[in-house]
Image (cartoon, rainbow, N blue to C red; front, side):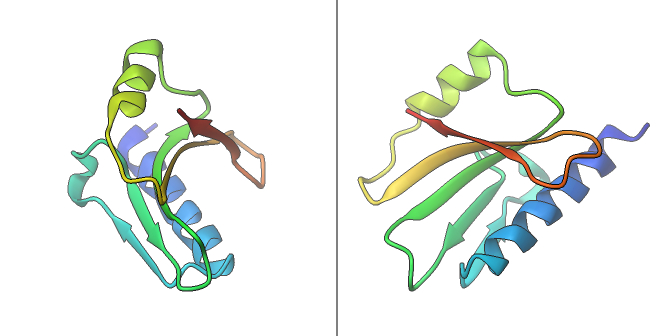
Length: 96
């Protein structure tokens, strides 16, 4: 199984879900080398979403610590979206 392709498919799924929720601009980090995979901005939304997309399991403790330590303004929310095989919607977890 090509895990990189699977991750890219799940990032695209997340992007489409966010756009369906009314986010006007959803940007994918190039090669996913940043802390978060997607950044979502919406005129009708009160915050910017920073999203880490995972397949089948949540990040480990070290990665969760890194996500939690990322400093962002008050109007941002950090989330992890976990897409499980054969499940239509992701499990969404807020990162604090």
